[in-house]
Image (cartoon, rainbow, N blue to C red):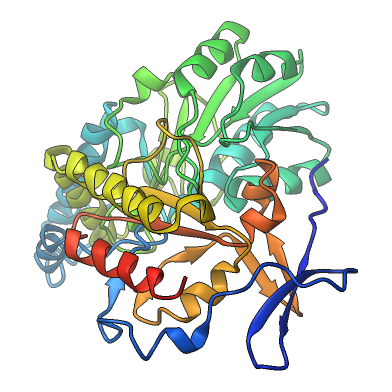
Length: 417
């Protein structure tokens, strides 16, 4: 149930030196691949670097850099020290905690700083499991979660937990009724992402939160992709635990946060001294905490997401005009992150397309290795056909993306058709 076998297509080269695709076990070639000889001779702006991978990581915002510079030399004391050198460090961390809480709409004492989204997810799942200490513990999640949720779930299965991996529809959305039907007397946690990192589909967390609370079950969400892109409060979502990843939010890599609703008990993931109110041992990283706080404060004030959505929709419209039925949208048509456009170039290989656009940074939805193409777990769970999914590319826009960049990418893609 956890592993879905997918169809594979071979990546071959014709006698003329052109790449073609064929299903394994078949002697018939697939539809013609993109012609490499049509690319470099006529592409415009091939030396221009265009970054369309903001869901993978974001650059540091200037405001975040400024905040970090302010604490590089001072304060240098330990935030836990009560003397003159430690007090400024404590104030800097406290301010950052308040800024994160301000973005999420919670109290500062409900924020635990972490090393990133993966640690936050691990702390949520393992912390609940070890705090509850039930031999028959049951967890509900989905098949399209990030590996930082899937793999801790599998780890907990090795320790005796039972995990239900819910299916999603063709858009990548889970049905709240499936969550309700999956509940057991032994269910200790529901963990469902807010927005999918690959296709951008937004999950119906409010409905699921109501179901969880009616059943008295804790509800966690991996919000790494939604924080800063969707305006929400943790109370509005109905979550008890929520994960934040700094580098998806114009903060540095290596910092994140876990929202823990007041009254929720978690076993610490890292044991030691009583930092983070006893929830995570280790001297606070003043520099990175300040950076995350500044990024969250900036996200509260930034009002440009509607413009990003307009660029994304322009992108999709231009692709449809150029390619027609040879391009398909992956993800929900409306309930989707404003910056995310995952499209498939039908019967093509996404890795080969990006390989001919060396200046464009984007992500693919399939892996081409050992002469075969295998769909991502997310596309497989959505039931995307292999001949469509193998051509998937995720373009994720950001605050600095321009119309000119979008038009350049579409023009260069059209030259390869």
